Image (cartoon, each protein chain N blue to C red):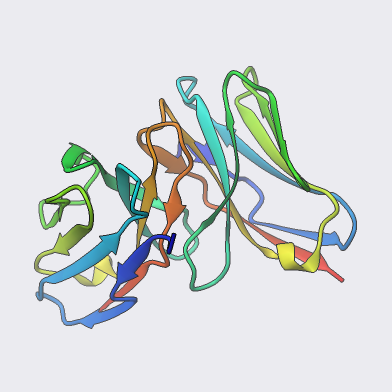
Length: 113
Length: 111
Protein backbone atom coordinates (compact mmCIF):
# COMPACT_ATOMS: atom_id res chain seq x y z
CA UNK A 1 0.00 0.00 0.00
CA UNK A 2 1.69 3.16 -1.22
CA UNK A 3 -0.84 5.61 0.21
CA UNK A 4 -2.56 8.46 -1.56
CA UNK A 5 -0.42 10.19 -4.16
CA UNK A 6 -0.90 13.56 -5.83
CA UNK A 7 0.71 15.08 -8.86
CA UNK A 8 2.19 17.59 -9.25
CA UNK A 9 3.37 18.57 -5.79
CA UNK A 10 3.82 22.16 -6.82
CA UNK A 11 2.31 24.18 -9.64
CA UNK A 12 3.01 27.79 -10.55
CA UNK A 13 0.77 29.25 -13.18
CA UNK A 14 -0.18 32.62 -14.56
CA UNK A 15 -3.58 34.09 -13.94
CA UNK A 16 -6.07 33.00 -16.57
CA UNK A 17 -4.42 29.66 -17.30
CA UNK A 18 -6.09 26.30 -16.70
CA UNK A 19 -4.56 23.76 -14.34
CA UNK A 20 -5.28 20.10 -13.68
CA UNK A 21 -4.25 18.09 -10.66
CA UNK A 22 -4.24 14.33 -10.32
CA UNK A 23 -4.95 12.15 -7.31
CA UNK A 24 -4.35 8.41 -7.02
CA UNK A 25 -6.16 6.98 -4.00
CA UNK A 26 -5.32 3.88 -1.99
CA UNK A 27 -6.25 1.08 -4.36
CA UNK A 28 -9.14 -0.54 -2.50
CA UNK A 29 -10.71 2.75 -1.42
CA UNK A 30 -14.06 3.58 -2.98
CA UNK A 31 -14.40 7.09 -1.63
CA UNK A 32 -12.27 9.97 -2.88
CA UNK A 33 -12.41 13.54 -1.57
CA UNK A 34 -10.97 16.86 -2.66
CA UNK A 35 -10.20 19.69 -0.24
CA UNK A 36 -8.60 23.10 -0.40
CA UNK A 37 -6.50 24.47 2.41
CA UNK A 38 -5.35 28.05 2.79
CA UNK A 39 -2.91 29.44 5.32
CA UNK A 40 -4.20 29.27 8.88
CA UNK A 41 -7.30 27.32 7.96
CA UNK A 42 -8.33 23.71 8.07
CA UNK A 43 -9.06 21.72 4.93
CA UNK A 44 -12.19 22.95 3.20
CA UNK A 45 -14.34 20.28 1.57
CA UNK A 46 -14.86 20.68 -2.18
CA UNK A 47 -16.34 17.47 -3.57
CA UNK A 48 -16.31 13.70 -3.23
CA UNK A 49 -16.81 10.53 -5.24
CA UNK A 50 -18.15 7.10 -4.49
CA UNK A 51 -16.40 5.03 -7.15
CA UNK A 52 -16.97 7.02 -10.34
CA UNK A 53 -20.09 8.83 -9.11
CA UNK A 54 -19.67 12.40 -7.92
CA UNK A 55 -22.02 12.56 -4.96
CA UNK A 56 -21.58 16.17 -3.93
CA UNK A 57 -20.31 19.09 -5.92
CA UNK A 58 -22.25 22.04 -4.59
CA UNK A 59 -19.28 22.95 -2.42
CA UNK A 60 -16.98 23.46 -5.39
CA UNK A 61 -15.91 27.06 -5.14
CA UNK A 62 -17.18 28.22 -8.50
CA UNK A 63 -18.08 26.88 -11.93
CA UNK A 64 -14.41 27.22 -12.83
CA UNK A 65 -13.76 24.15 -10.67
CA UNK A 66 -14.57 20.66 -11.86
CA UNK A 67 -13.57 17.16 -10.87
CA UNK A 68 -13.75 13.74 -12.45
CA UNK A 69 -13.10 10.18 -11.51
CA UNK A 70 -13.79 8.45 -14.81
CA UNK A 71 -13.08 4.84 -13.96
CA UNK A 72 -13.48 4.95 -10.23
CA UNK A 73 -9.74 4.93 -9.68
CA UNK A 74 -7.70 8.13 -10.03
CA UNK A 75 -9.34 11.55 -10.01
CA UNK A 76 -8.55 14.92 -11.53
CA UNK A 77 -9.41 18.39 -10.30
CA UNK A 78 -9.38 21.14 -12.92
CA UNK A 79 -9.43 24.86 -12.35
CA UNK A 80 -10.16 26.96 -15.40
CA UNK A 81 -9.15 30.60 -15.79
CA UNK A 82 -7.18 30.62 -12.58
CA UNK A 83 -7.27 33.65 -10.31
CA UNK A 84 -4.81 34.74 -7.64
CA UNK A 85 -7.35 33.77 -4.99
CA UNK A 86 -7.07 30.16 -6.15
CA UNK A 87 -3.57 29.98 -4.68
CA UNK A 88 -3.77 27.30 -2.00
CA UNK A 89 -2.92 23.73 -1.12
CA UNK A 90 -5.24 21.24 -2.81
CA UNK A 91 -5.58 18.01 -0.89
CA UNK A 92 -6.98 14.68 -1.93
CA UNK A 93 -8.09 11.98 0.49
CA UNK A 94 -9.55 8.51 0.17
CA UNK A 95 -11.43 6.17 2.43
CA UNK A 96 -12.66 2.61 2.26
CA UNK A 97 -16.31 3.58 2.69
CA UNK A 98 -18.53 6.08 4.49
CA UNK A 99 -17.78 6.15 8.19
CA UNK A 100 -14.18 5.14 7.72
CA UNK A 101 -11.21 7.41 8.28
CA UNK A 102 -9.83 9.38 5.36
CA UNK A 103 -6.21 9.17 4.35
CA UNK A 104 -4.71 12.26 2.79
CA UNK A 105 -2.16 12.71 0.07
CA UNK A 106 0.69 15.21 0.35
CA UNK A 107 -1.22 17.89 -1.53
CA UNK A 108 -0.57 20.06 -4.56
CA UNK A 109 0.58 23.59 -3.80
CA UNK A 110 -0.85 25.99 -6.41
CA UNK A 111 0.56 29.46 -6.85
CA UNK A 112 -1.18 31.79 -9.28
CA UNK A 113 0.92 34.78 -10.32
CA UNK B 1 -20.12 29.57 8.81
CA UNK B 2 -17.62 27.56 10.85
CA UNK B 3 -19.37 24.41 12.02
CA UNK B 4 -16.28 23.04 13.73
CA UNK B 5 -14.19 25.30 15.93
CA UNK B 6 -10.85 24.95 17.59
CA UNK B 7 -10.61 28.02 19.75
CA UNK B 8 -7.00 27.58 20.85
CA UNK B 9 -4.65 28.37 17.98
CA UNK B 10 -1.65 27.15 19.95
CA UNK B 11 -0.67 25.08 22.97
CA UNK B 12 2.68 24.46 24.67
CA UNK B 13 3.25 21.48 26.94
CA UNK B 14 6.26 20.04 28.69
CA UNK B 15 7.50 16.66 27.54
CA UNK B 16 5.93 13.86 29.55
CA UNK B 17 2.88 15.88 30.55
CA UNK B 18 -0.63 15.63 29.16
CA UNK B 19 -1.70 17.59 26.08
CA UNK B 20 -5.40 18.37 25.81
CA UNK B 21 -6.71 19.72 22.53
CA UNK B 22 -10.31 20.87 22.32
CA UNK B 23 -12.87 21.08 19.57
CA UNK B 24 -16.47 22.34 19.49
CA UNK B 25 -19.10 21.80 16.86
CA UNK B 26 -22.49 23.32 16.17
CA UNK B 27 -24.32 20.74 14.07
CA UNK B 28 -26.12 18.19 16.24
CA UNK B 29 -26.39 15.86 13.23
CA UNK B 30 -22.64 15.21 13.22
CA UNK B 31 -22.07 11.62 14.21
CA UNK B 32 -18.50 10.83 13.24
CA UNK B 33 -15.41 12.68 14.36
CA UNK B 34 -11.74 12.42 13.54
CA UNK B 35 -8.45 13.94 14.65
CA UNK B 36 -5.56 14.57 12.31
CA UNK B 37 -1.98 15.66 12.82
CA UNK B 38 -0.23 17.77 10.20
CA UNK B 39 3.42 18.57 9.70
CA UNK B 40 4.47 21.43 7.41
CA UNK B 41 4.45 20.59 3.69
CA UNK B 42 2.64 17.29 4.29
CA UNK B 43 -0.95 16.19 4.11
CA UNK B 44 -2.84 15.55 7.36
CA UNK B 45 -2.19 12.20 9.01
CA UNK B 46 -5.11 10.34 10.59
CA UNK B 47 -4.77 9.83 14.34
CA UNK B 48 -7.99 8.59 15.88
CA UNK B 49 -11.73 8.63 15.33
CA UNK B 50 -14.90 8.31 17.36
CA UNK B 51 -18.51 7.75 16.45
CA UNK B 52 -21.40 9.27 18.31
CA UNK B 53 -22.40 5.94 19.83
CA UNK B 54 -19.29 6.10 22.02
CA UNK B 55 -17.99 8.72 24.41
CA UNK B 56 -14.38 7.59 24.49
CA UNK B 57 -11.89 5.91 22.20
CA UNK B 58 -8.27 5.07 22.97
CA UNK B 59 -5.32 4.23 20.80
CA UNK B 60 -2.02 4.06 22.60
CA UNK B 61 -1.10 7.48 23.91
CA UNK B 62 -4.11 9.09 22.21
CA UNK B 63 -7.61 9.23 23.68
CA UNK B 64 -10.56 11.08 22.24
CA UNK B 65 -13.52 12.05 24.41
CA UNK B 66 -16.90 13.04 23.02
CA UNK B 67 -19.52 15.00 24.94
CA UNK B 68 -22.56 15.06 22.69
CA UNK B 69 -24.70 17.21 24.93
CA UNK B 70 -22.03 19.90 24.98
CA UNK B 71 -21.09 19.32 21.32
CA UNK B 72 -17.51 19.08 22.40
CA UNK B 73 -14.67 16.69 21.82
CA UNK B 74 -11.15 16.59 23.09
CA UNK B 75 -7.94 14.79 22.27
CA UNK B 76 -5.66 13.77 25.11
CA UNK B 77 -2.05 12.85 24.45
CA UNK B 78 -0.29 11.16 27.35
CA UNK B 79 2.64 11.35 27.74
CA UNK B 80 3.45 14.12 25.29
CA UNK B 81 6.63 13.72 23.26
CA UNK B 82 8.59 16.27 21.22
CA UNK B 83 7.64 14.39 18.05
CA UNK B 84 4.02 15.23 18.77
CA UNK B 85 4.73 18.86 17.92
CA UNK B 86 2.49 19.58 14.93
CA UNK B 87 -0.83 21.17 14.01
CA UNK B 88 -3.83 19.14 15.09
CA UNK B 89 -7.16 19.31 13.28
CA UNK B 90 -10.49 17.93 14.36
CA UNK B 91 -13.09 17.05 11.75
CA UNK B 92 -16.75 16.14 11.91
CA UNK B 93 -19.29 14.67 9.53
CA UNK B 94 -22.83 13.44 9.26
CA UNK B 95 -22.84 9.80 8.21
CA UNK B 96 -19.24 9.92 7.02
CA UNK B 97 -19.92 12.01 3.95
CA UNK B 98 -18.87 15.66 3.88
CA UNK B 99 -16.26 16.45 6.49
CA UNK B 100 -15.89 19.82 8.21
CA UNK B 101 -12.54 20.70 9.68
CA UNK B 102 -11.57 23.10 12.44
CA UNK B 103 -8.84 25.69 11.97
CA UNK B 104 -6.28 23.68 13.89
CA UNK B 105 -4.26 23.92 17.09
CA UNK B 106 -0.49 24.12 16.91
CA UNK B 107 1.00 21.94 19.63
CA UNK B 108 4.55 22.46 20.82
CA UNK B 109 6.01 19.88 23.17
CA UNK B 110 8.98 21.33 25.00
CA UNK B 111 11.80 18.86 25.80
